[in-house]
Image (cartoon, rainbow, N blue to C red; front, side, top):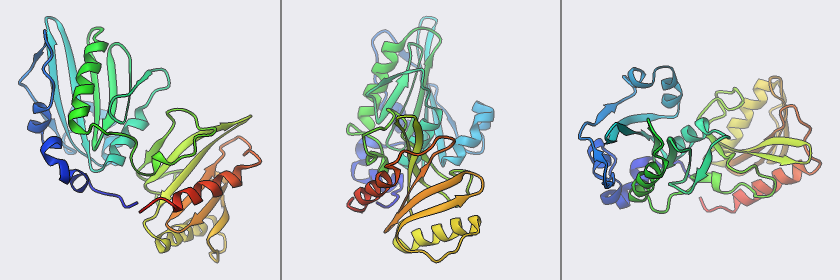
Amino acid sequence: MRRISCVLLLLASIATTGQTPADLYARLPRVEGWILSGKVEVFNPANLFDRINGAAPLYIENNFQEMTSMEYARDETYITMQVYRHATPEDAFGMYAAERSGGLATFPIGGEAQGDEGSLSFFVACLYVKMWSNGEAGEVIREIAGAFAREIDPRAGYPGLSRWFPASGKVSYSESYTTSNFLGHEFLKRVYSARYRQGDSSYLLFVVDAGGREEARALLERYFAFAKQPSAFNEGELLVKDRYNGEIPVFWKGAYVTGLFPGDDPLPRDAREILKGFAETLSAVER
């Protein structure tokens, strides 16, 4: 499953998914009793710091391209909507997942949404969207968000390999995507992960789509070089003795490298079978 750019992914439906600031504004619903301001602010990687200050580096790490800020108003109440366009759907999902909070309600808007009566965030296609109000306007926020998400992609869902994690034991809404520096390693890029619980054990199940068999071998060679382990290995079950993160069981099959990060918890007895089964499931996914 190759990493597809936002332009290529949406080319076939560009008429309904245009993502310039003007296109985004045109796709906002008109809501009775609310005024959609004509003021549209646009930020790029060079000036995003002016709007969100210290949070900007994380957005840029997730391949942020442009942010469009728009606003609804009714009397003294306003709703602000910030639409962050990223390079790929995975990047937008990764940014959403990085700011996901366990204390908020989840809604079926876009690929996934969470919020309360004063705020909402969601991702759809290459967009990560944040909305908030100075009052309790949750119902209107969700109405706007739902209509906007359907305009962008009515079939939105989790992107790429994040859809293929096994359901048994998976912690709800724990899927994530990391552009680089997974487990603190620069070479572990474009990593999908999800958290699992089995008995007293909690761990991350992760996968890297290296793009091809030789690319997967090269990635593992770098990991083994870091761990000062022999670089002679074959496809199948492997163990990386990561001096920063402990022992990391991995399974290499074709273009995919799957792994388990136990953290401080012991892995369940069937951990290696879980790992192998996940790798075999992915190998059957059409690329």
